[in-house]
Amino acid sequence: MGVIPEVKIKPTTTRMVSQPGMAGTVAVIGAFENVSTEEKVYSFNTLTAAQEELTPLEGYDIFDKLFRRDSGASSLLCVNITTNGTSDTKETEMTNEKLVSALNLLKGEKYDILFIAAELTDEGLTTVKEFLDDAYDLQKPVGVIAPLNRASDTLATASAKIFESGGLYGLITQKFTLSDNKTLSLVESAAYYCGVVAGLKIDQSMTMSQLPDVINVSPEYGYSDNEEGYNLVTAGITVVRCMDRINNKYVVVNSELPSGLDLYIERTKDYVIRDICLEEFLGDKSTSNTITAIKSMIETKKQLFINTLSLLEDLNYNVEKESPKCVNVYLDSLVFAGVITTINIHVVVEVE
Image (cartoon, rainbow, N blue to C red; front, side, top):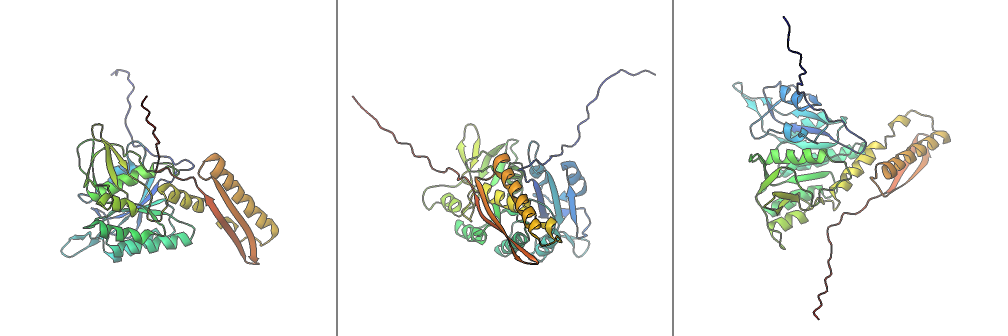
């Protein structure tokens, strides 16, 4: 029998493709249901693939927040911390022992942002910080985004100080309500922010940037001297406030982190260090030709970072041979543009 000729479009999943200057692979540590408790790293390039294999717990529905519809994470690496309990139950609490085990699984993996899908204690945050410090030493620096639930701004400030020397991309203390009137849990709100950051070119600051689709935040803070919002922002915690209630404009007050550096500087610094990959020279003969090749590679990267990607203002470096088996590479300075946080308007009024 004949059929009516027609063209059908069948929607499929969207895969984000990373471009130079993007760093959108997110490693996720969290508890998931209905999956094997085998210790392994799951890898997903699409939202559908993640949802088909892993089921987040209620209040931890994070995958669509991370991948996002428009521009979010390009891929996910996931570690499940759920274990078997007694009487066929599942243990989903994020203990420090489970956190350590999950972080160990991620050692050597290639990703750009670490996301913790749980509210950690200061012990847990310290464990994460130590892991990130080790990753930095191995030329694989990344930063963490995580929810932060503390009883006061004083306690939250103390938690933020754990990351004074770096390793943080954001601590989220507020729950977001989206344009569909759904209020996210704290973990989901942190995942939402992580997805937004993952979809940005790394040289973009979040200071005074609007969070898309957010129509409310809870709690809302005050920002006068010594009010809670002021203290949290000063501590380098990521805080969102309403700038235009009629048009539902909610912005990140300041994306400067506890290190004193803006989010874009922390992300770019980590990206540059990861991208100047010198492992290819291991095993080469220690000759002047090798030293010249290393310098040439770094110079090529320098031009890429400055002239093509516009990530840096300048990069000063030096390469020298220390011994027959050792070469020292000095990245003497990564020069960044500052982020404007103050504009002074001088007004003169004349009456004639």
